[in-house]
Length: 374
Image (cartoon, rainbow, N blue to C red):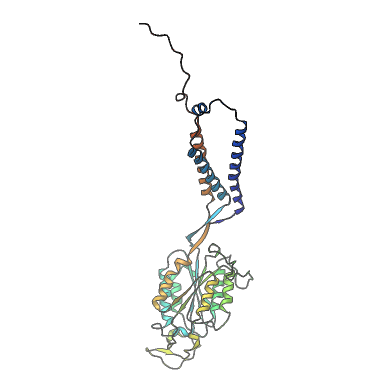
């Protein structure tokens, strides 16, 4: 819980001031009190409330002032609510290493299958956009609820040279800026907020989210950390998914999974597939950078070693990216409780200190009547 006007808590000083006034007034009454011949007669005639009955209204009044002061400070509670205006930009790596066969039949096929399952199972009002990146990055499908268009684009993914993770983040930012006026495009200067102590809280992030699925490290374009700074400055979360194992494997893709800009070294196994060289460094996953990108933007990094793991990660993503922490003012509830407590204090104070009715008070003794005659 946070307070919009924390200085309003000064109203809580009213209670100790009331206690001081009560102590002063009682002391003053003692000094001017009239001495009576019999205190016992006075107590019998005007019985006062017991000690605990005097303290209960005072305690209720103290609680009432506490709640009233908190209400004046305008408290806000952070609640988790589904956001139908959310947008998910799914950026899929289509570099040549996605043909690696450490994931059966290869990484690209497994990623396509998991992405299509993610789209098919997605429910709710959040829209999904698709970005593909290799040495460059481009928006294939703007954010939409048309699942068939997304599925068709995923089926048409082709591998190419290079890995531009940073450019994928920037392309996703521009796609979000097209539909969210609160997000400036990448060509606009904004104050950077790269995960420092002044990082935005959960309730300050935009509902739009970027998801980067990659199997390697950045080789082209903008550094991913630099791109993440741009996303953080726009209060966009970037979830990163590292896909594949750390063991280099033969790379084999079918003919319809390879773009025309790649060189081949002959036919690969599996019939109709193409194998090509390069099982070195570019197949290594840069997990430290992917983790840093996610942390800088208030998101998380996930690791998927196989097709099942990738499907599980994508299946669980909507529960994190489409649920938003929003601040709701709850001062009215504090004010209501304060009013009830003060009313209860006044009622009990009046009820327990009211004078007894005349029928219960002892009346003057009646004079004796004449003695009866026999």
